[in-house]
Image 1: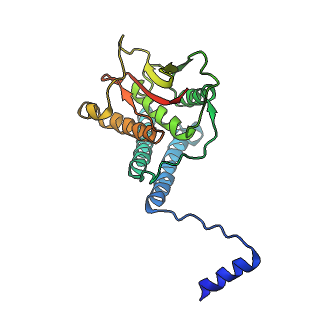
Image 2: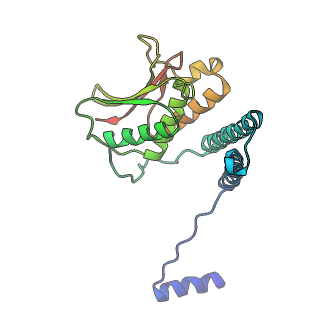
Image 3: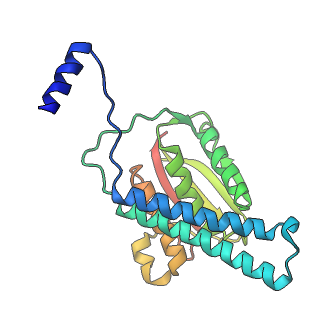
Length: 233
């Protein structure tokens, strides 16, 4: 009875009611875990500040380990949530604004630099202003994960590149010390037993995020280069 009265009221007044989307359990878990991890990271940073007292080298090392473990935990939480997220029931494209390739890759390179990943950028002539309709945030997350693996957490620099191949745009990440002639021609499934847990988790998340852009990840057996196709150019 109450539901019918509400319906009549809406029709009579011409009002529109926007229902707040229902949060699923995974969303709630991610929110709470992220809040807890951010607290650990934040307090670790405070402990490391001189104004709260100088830490001994051993104490500073402990605090650094705690912060690193918290960041790793956040990475695992995000990956678990993403891997358990259901795939779309249809193939309708998201309504996303087109983004020029140059602008997109410069944003990604800036994020690399913020993560202390040294990176050169190379864009083939004619691709700079080519517009792509992609989920920029998720593509950026996928590329950061690839770069962390390929640079061995920043131990070496990398090159982020965009090339044209058979009328298709190919985005690649390559380590500066990649073996001459190394080619990203292998899938992650083929390397599953040869990749350590942390690298596998990062690569799997990148693979899933790229698959939602209708892109297939290819990597080299030595994990020193990776590439994927990204729409028509």
